[in-house]
Image 1 (cartoon, rainbow, N blue to C red):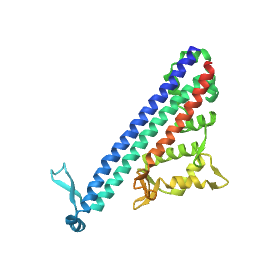
Image 2 (cartoon, rainbow, N blue to C red):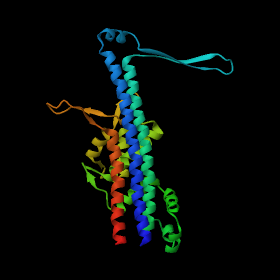
Image 3 (tube, one colour):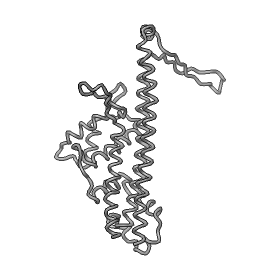
Image 4 (cartoon, one colour):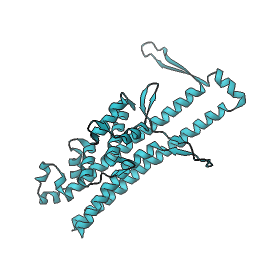
Length: 297
């Protein structure tokens, strides 16, 4: 019984660590939003100045030379020159803000993966039926002698990686709930695919339809050649066609407020994705906690 109580404390620690780390990512994202929005407001205020309005249309706001010193000759070599107009600056700032959001999503997903591995390790100690056959051969006496880090290392070596662990835990604990027309699996697979595009393709998709198909297949929702329309709509909220291609969009979308309500309403893409990661870990821990309490009692 004392072992079960220690394990119950472990799962509380896992949740506290996870929620705190993700919370720090969200705080950093909000700081980034404030910094960039302040700069955007400053630039827009310049465009509203009557005296400067005509000037900024005709002349660039700044000019930039890029160069390096050739070590073989000691001479400076100029490789680029940019004249930045107001619209250029605004576009550059918005793109960089979105890119920083992408970096933060990568970080949040890595925290999510670490936590899934810890929960998988926790599950192994409590119920070995979820683990591969070779792990089942370890005797109870051997398991008692192993520390928690041992099981975390085993989880890290699990074939298919953390995303497969997540899908297995969702199935095993029967927590693939659906809300607003989408299942937990669909939402988590979508975030995982976004993270892959951000890491390996700098946030650009070569084919949006192929991307949607991949999400549908990997989440087990591609039925009879059909893709859930709600899934298509959801994914389209996070991708956008631009001059350089189809890109992952994570910045805020300003919505039209209701009549007679002069307030700013935003569709917070980034934090909606974070919500998916939080809900997943929350539901898994909730199920595991219920099992732990039953075992203690």
